[in-house]
Image (cartoon, rainbow, N blue to C red):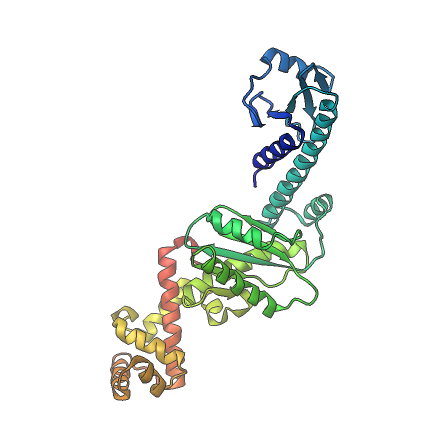
Length: 365
């Protein structure tokens, strides 16, 4: 919630309790938050009060206060009403506003610090000193989650995730440009990768059911201290990218579970193209019809079990054999054998990676 909304709610609550009207002005004497639409003092009166040394000025029905926070925001508080308690209530309101402004500024400072830390903008010494000033632990174990939804800059998903983690004051939830929602979670000593993976699945399920949107969640290896968080963020981004390229049927991608996809992703595209040329020679993977490719994928998912594959596809076992023999005749690969099945699986993954690289030139190694 923005500070303006927070302060507007506070002014309304104070009015209900005290039956006084409150109005906050910004440095340009514009209304920042108010409980009434009464006429303001003249610019001359307001500027004269600002230029003076007094922190408060009062008459029979109006008290004006300067709000001097560390940011030199130049706020004024106007309290309208009469009675002996007006000045006391006004002073209490000023104290509460200063507390809220300080807390909000600290929260924003921590958020900015964490964003810059993830981007690797600080030296180790600078990061350590800034963390100390903001009272952020420098030695806590943390994990970085990256959450993406179908909608770019999904504010609803961001608000929902913040609500999920609202009780955890040491976690950070932020976003940077269009890179998704970032969660930096402080781990307990008993937390392991299975707990982290379960949390990732919980986030996917919550966003699917509550926010009604498809979501993908990736996570890094554990960061043992602040100095490791920039690398952890890169790991989470890589896990998301590799997962979407090679494991399109999944929604959760752990950096420690990327398998063969990690190896292929780190190969130069030129090497991958040479590999496809070697396997297919004059042909290509695109020359295989979608029905056959779908059959092959189901066959691989069933661990090369012909009977189970034919049952799931509602086709006769001999039909599958015929399709695979055609494939063998065309490319010289009998995917019913382990070695040729592994080779063909690799070609499918390499082809996916090349297609992705062509569509996203900046991602090419």
